[in-house]
Amino acid sequence: MIPDESNMNLISCDTMKKIFFFPVFALISLTVVAQHDNYGQNDRDVLIKALHAVSEDDISDWMHTMISPEMRGRLAGDEGYDMAAEWAAGKFEEWGLDPFFPEKGYFQEFDQPYTLIKDKGKLAMHVAVDEGDTITKTYRYGDDYWPWGISGSGEVTAEVVYAGHGISAPELGYDDYAEVDVEGKIVITELGIPYDGDDPDSLAMWQPYVDHSNKVKFALENGAVGLIFAYHVASPRPTADPDFIFLAATDEVVKDFLAGTGRELSVVRENIRNTLTPHSFPTGKKATLALTSEYYPDGKTSNVVAMIEGSDPELKDEFLIVGAHLDHLGMMPVLFPGALDNASGSALALGIAKALATSEAELKRTVIILLFGAEEVGLVGARQFVERFPHPQEQIKMMVNLDMVGRGDSFFAWTAEPWDELLEVMERNNDRWVHRHFQTRSNPWQMPLRPRTDGMVFYMAQIPAVTFGTRGAETRALYHVPEDDMRQIDIEIMRDVVKVLTMSLIDLGNMDTIELDTP
Image 1 (spheres, rainbow, N blue to C red):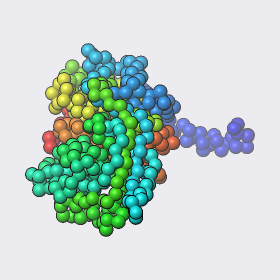
Image 2: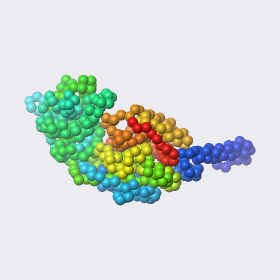
Image 3: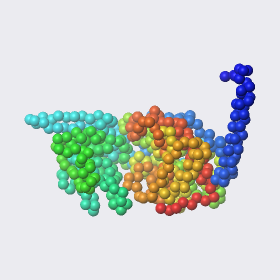
Image 4: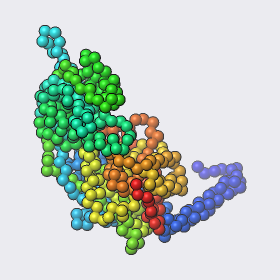
């Protein structure tokens, strides 16, 4: 709007002072920041270009591409993931990043079996009533149960036995199968392990029994033909046995099977935890489990790995890593788009790559942008990268992991106490450039019981690792469901994550030394 003449004096006397003052103040402020030692030789123009290199439209476009039906939910091993990996590599090439493994281009390949879920399956409960009649209750796909890739293909009807955590650990004095006969039957098992304490020695003894595939292993060893998992989440983990059927159900389904046994699910769970004693028993009911799946034992997939080589002849052999998993659940059999989990983290990693590369910011150290394959089936891509890293691991000075980072209005970051200086760098750059509320936390280093994200693979190898995330969303995150789409994403905070981490990497990349304690 053009002001009328009656207001011109006010503008010239008051507003013009503010208009003149602001850019002078901003210039002085930015000049001081640009001269900070940790930003190296990067001047104000380079820093501002890096800060604004990625728009909300960029992030939105990348996410819409990754969650599109053409990419089939990005299941590691499937053609949809391969398409996503090729697309991401094309972005790295477009922005001028170099492949980290030159002999393979941008791809670090590895073997990865995978399973395609071909139908919605079936879960039904059969209750015998008077005079030999049977009442059948059929449950609903999604609302009541999800299929898992760990399942084989087929249909089975059998008696149902509640088998606690489904663990046989005689060396720990614990065996859920010791007092029940499950030969030819279906078992119900719980998530995780019965021990819920924090003693490091006890955790180390129980840790081998956490993995879901062990529940199938013990069930098979005891003659079971199927498993109802009391954990209502979908998962793509590949088939454990081609004839063994596995479905994941809600607590309400499990309560239906326990009805009439005189036992309440919450009480049974509490007794197991409090006494570390199995509470297994027959339910007196039968179930039908069915699923059609296709198992590909010879599947292959890859990480997508690019780098921006450092400018310093010596410090370029030190590495800063930004990681996010590119894979999701695939088609089960409907599309699981995986917007929050983890097109969000992948888009942020791409944004940081673009900001650093196109701004031509100088970093003395080498930055690696790492999109993991096969996170959803057990952190396989992260393990492949750490185990096959072609340099001494101590040359990795920092890894920041981005997983489900796309909701809310504030930041959080977590690491182990020996590495909390990394949090200080990120807080400093938030204070300088973005000004979001930022909560940080560090704890004594200890072996995690159930590592669930790629950064924990680096953490377990005692490589300095930071989990960076967002918080403050008003609604609950939709996790491992077909509804994980753009409706739950806040693009604005994702843009600010790119800014904070881009400037933090320029900061870290130009420090004279990065000396962190060893756990």
